[in-house]
Image 1 (cartoon, rainbow, N blue to C red):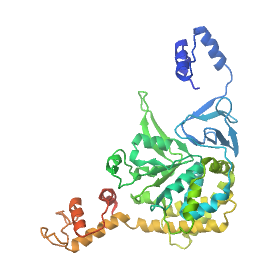
Image 2: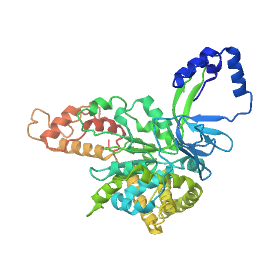
Image 3: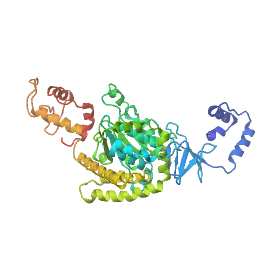
Image 4: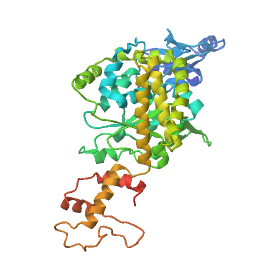
Amino acid sequence: MEFDGSNLESPSSFNKALLNNTHGGTFDGNARQLKNLRDGWLNRKIKRVSSLPFIGFDKEVNAWIFQDHAFHGGQRIDLNKQGYFDLPKNGIKTSLKSIRIHTGGEHKPDWIMDYLTAFHWQGMSLLAFFLGTLFVQQIRKQQKSWPFLEFTGEPGAGKSTALEFCWALLGREDYEGFDLNDATPAGLRRTFNSVSNMPVVLIESDRNAPDYKDTAKKGGVNFDQLKKLYNGRGTGTLGVARRNNEVEEHLFQGSLIISQNAQVDGSEALLQRIVHCHADKKHHGKGTKEVAERLAAMDVKELSGFLDDALKNENKILDVYFKKFAECRQRFTDNGSLKVERVVKCYAQIAAAGYALPVLFPSLTEQHSEMLEAYLFQRAHVREERLADDHPLVQAFWDQYDYMNEVPAPGIAEFEIRSDFMNHSKSDHEIAISFEHFKKLSELHRQDRLDLQAVKKLIENSARY
């Protein structure tokens, strides 16, 4: 039980604190008796116990703090009878109750080949990202950054199953991510601040759902505003109510995964920071579905040993990571086909984390790691191509615009037919489009129906026009 200093100021304040924080506890003594108690508690050498408002790694004590166990120097530490972890120099615990992490399990790595069969190299990239995230502050300390992961997927490809499975490896049960449709600025900021050396997964519900427009109004995230999280910078500034100019700003101590239906679009600087993997069904064969279902049925207690084993092997994992990162970055730039340094760095970081997976999974060979690296090398090429072009939805929009400007459709006799009749601007240097006009012509031309709400958000970054 925690007390503020004001709770020990007088018998009445101490009595009130007991009533509020215990099951029926009271104090009926006088001021002298309270002073005797207070002197006995405070006027002696006592161990300081810190209470963290998050879970995960605390760099001040160089330990991972969860509800039931802590990990320090490769050793697992149990919660003591007083309800805190007794570390060499001080005591510590977490006060966060909204996220529950199961620890203490036994790592059984025999499922890894089933995982590769079910989720292929996209899933292995996700697993490597989760492993690297457990040491993200150690990595940022040397390399100054850790990439964002965009994990998209076609329906039935297993995107959600893979995310929930990886969360179970970190001891979090039945969880996929934080739904952006329910986000408020305060809720998003608290989500970012609640974990350390663990991922924050942002998901977005189906854009085609009947209530999408209503729920999207609640929050909406401009991903360009999140660029600073790449370097572990602040999650937002709050004023402190002390009648002065003090402000409070928490640093981002985790990693960011974006998993939504539409691809993220934004500035070039944002897109360079994102490693994009798209789950598909090309690798699906006979029995793939059954393998995925078997993995999904595994209990968090069977899987959370991954977390324990990873934290016990911190030094081995980081040694492999830093060694392989230098090698991967060199190979990515050797033939000169990749030009953007930040893209090279981001994809090499995930590839290097992939080379560390055999520390926990002895059945993974060097060839497996090399194939994962080859997949990420190919994805880096796709990312650079994306940087040089528009978002696919914006490309489709302009393709339809150009086509409908050139090819008359039945029923548009009331419009003046000219090469740019869809452009309502009077300036030669601007294009002004009525979305209602565009929608009507698309139906007349029998073009694919586009998500024009999404187009409105994406089109400001257009390169073609």
